[in-house]
Structures are given as C-alpha cells and as structure tokens.
Length: 189
Image 1: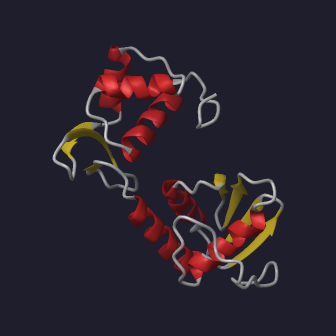
Image 2: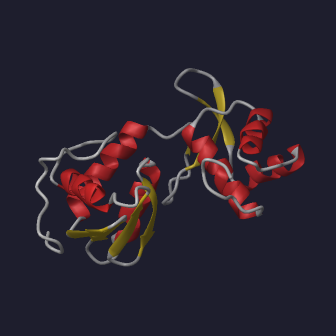
C-alpha cells in the first residue's frame, strides 16, 4: 500500500495517479515519472506511459524556475496546461468558496456534513480535494451536501470548526481553526 492508499491495477487509476503527480510536483522526464509511479507500486512500461501522457494531453511547459516539466490541462474547461498546483492559491480558493457557498455544518465522530446552495456541493468538494488537506481522507458530494471524512476517528468537530473559520473569513491553510473558534449549534448556519 502506498501513502495514497490501495491503488487498483487499472488504466484509470494509473492515469489519475499520473495527473496527481504532475499536478503536485515538477517532473522533467518519463523516466522520473515512471520511478515515481513505481514508488507508489504502479509498474508501467515506457510505451504505456507515453500513451497515457498523450491521452491525458500532457505537454512539457516551462516552470517558474525555467525548467521544462510535464503538465496536464486543468479542469472545468480550462485546457491550459499548468506546471503544478499552487498550494496557497488552492487554499485561498477553498477559503473563498467556503465563504460564498457554506450554508450550514454538522459533525459526528470523523464525519462532517456541509450544506451548500443547490448545485454547489461538487464545486466545493472539488476545491477541498485540490487543496489536499492532510486531515481529510476524502469527500463525497451530492447536489447540496458534501460529506467530508476526517483521517482522525474523532476529527470531525475540528474539521467542522476549520470550515466554519474559512467561511467566516479566517484563512488557515496549514492547520485547524484555533480552539476559541465559536461552534454554532449543530445544523445551523
């Protein structure tokens, strides 16, 4: 098992891992990418890797340091390849979206339920996923509800406070909300 959990031996899982690697770091060659995949327990030939990169529309772009690195196009219709994700930008985006979209919160054990206006839950969950929050195991989104699963078996309440802090304008990209953050009654905005 890699640090990313169990990765099935499927084309889709392999390609998603490639996107994750290219989106979070600078990869200069197919050999380097193959080595990173191998470290995650994914065996891949150079020919397969080359086909995957073509199917993912990966291209080499110049990074901010001037090096040529692989990049994949963004989501949501943005087809411009990006060298790598800016963690501060994704955290700022999550903070802005929490402020704009969060209607109410509830937590229990390691679960947090976030309510949004109709149609906005997938958008908020995607921003959470892109922020790569270390204390979040995963998110599931419906139409107006996001279920956030905390890594800590008792971490739901702390995550709830964190999201409320973001909604109230407190940017805390690398940690949780302070202990003095007021927690409203469950189920209320």
